[in-house]
Amino acid sequence: MKAWWEALSTRERLWVVGGLGVLLLLLCYAQVWKPFWTSHRQLQQRTAEQRADLIWMRQAAREVKRLSAAAGAHPASDGRSLLTLVDQTARTAGLASTLKRVAPQGEDKLSAQLDAVEFDKLIPWLGMLEYDHRLAIVSLSVDRTDAAGLVNARVILQGVRP
Image 1 (cartoon, helix red, strand yellow):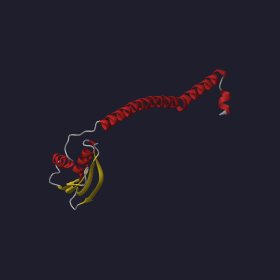
Image 2 (image 1 turned 90 degrees about the vertical axis):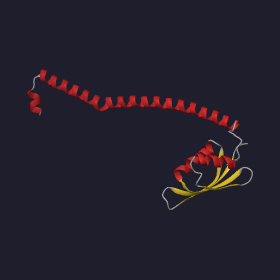
Image 3 (image 1 turned 60 degrees about the vertical axis):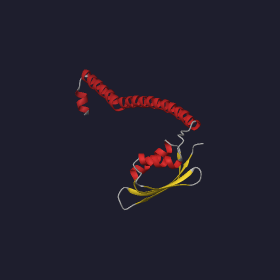
Image 4 (image 1 turned 45 degrees about the horizontal axis):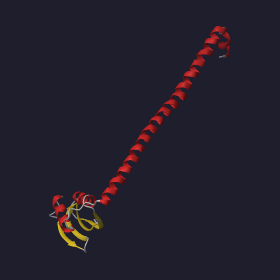
């Protein structure tokens, strides 16, 4: 290698050194600068997206607080008794045939027993009672049956309306 270098003229040596310098610069750009700059731009973009998400979340939180306060101040009340409400919503949800017993337990509670009810229908019905009709689930007991997807359920509901 040393003999080859010494055999080159001064002009050729300058070209080789210059070419190595350019190659070194290109290598540094490709291996160091470009990945760094790309990562930097991606981080800036993610930061901007996360700031926008944060602004949206803060607005949504204010809206949730506002709606919660409004719901608490004006509870939904259609004047139906708990027995009527549970019976009618069970019929609407297609659970009338599985609703075996509904019994009052005091002034603002009732118990309901459902036999061989589809689990996939039971849970949305309970959610509707809780969120749409403002009833609280005090107790819930669910047992599997031998049939796939069917359960026996016992639930105690309490009215949370003032």
